[in-house]
Image (cartoon, rainbow, N blue to C red):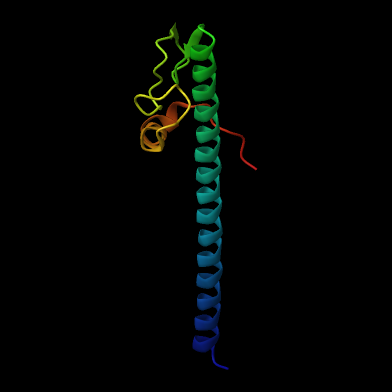
Length: 109
């Protein structure tokens, strides 16, 4: 085996290792983003449920920006005309997309 072939083999091996490392890093980032949005979704759903309970019991409801406001029994994520029970998934998804970065970041594993 001559020097050129050996050098080429080493170069290709290092390129393969680099690509695998990059793919692993990207997969980890994707997992972290998925965990983040999963946690963001759980937090929003928790706050929406708190909002609903506050409305049903005549108290205050917690808006997603954590500001206590008087309960009007129409949370931003509920379908209009419902008794604060049915979440409008489109509105909820839109909120997650636009406000997810403001929520507390979850722990990464």
